[in-house]
Image 1 (cartoon, helix red, strand yellow):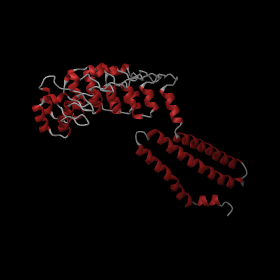
Image 2 (image 1 turned 135 degrees about the horizontal axis):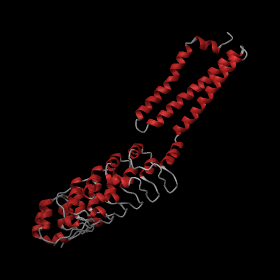
Image 3 (image 1 turned 45 degrees about the horizontal axis):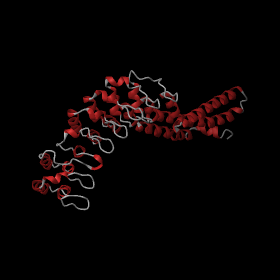
Length: 358
């Protein structure tokens, strides 16, 4: 049988170049061409499925078992069928894995082909429990990639697949939380069987709540804390609860540092102003103007400190869910000193304090 340097036969070349009519003719002349594999590990059957040539595929399959179904990297035609969402499949290949340990169901999950996922699961659900070389099952891949529809489809056929773990001891909820896929998390929390897993710890002792806190996934934190069975006091292997981690994370935020410092400045300056005015009332009347001038200066510091503390405090609370609101508050807060300055410059009292002896 004639082959080129890449070990391609005429049938390989016809399929690679999308000449279905020539492929038909070659199979009529010599069906044995379907048995040859090229140097890339591709059989004509694999190429026919990859090209979505249902007619050529049926032609090859019509001659019993006298054909090869090999594909590159250990793939089979069903892997290719998943990738192109072909309607022609070979059920006996459902559990076969490629070089990465992935089955056709893994592929269907990656491309989020619900039609293919349902087709495969209706014929054989055993592939749901097969882990690839990265320790991931199809439902774990779906959760990590955030494809809520794929997670729902798989769990509909195999509810117990929700208990599968990856190499790090993380379940489907861990991975959904880690990838910040709020829709998947919300859907999972509606399932009654997840209540036993919501506090489950991975190999490092981290529950989904710990992971959400570590990764600053605030919307998911809201969803988790609304769950009745959540354990807010659960500790990881380092002895930290989610609240401990939250405090440590906030302590490193610049906005919190600015808030604390400005709040302290505002308080100290306010106390100083109050003390000056009390001393002025009780002391020498000549000290009154001097005290008033000093009080205005310290009051200005307290004023700015209060504004900065207010703005940063609001920002810390709302920026995760409503960044636009945080920005609006910052703009309003920053504009206040200019308004006060205009009012102050037009005040006769201000002139008197600035020039008490004139």
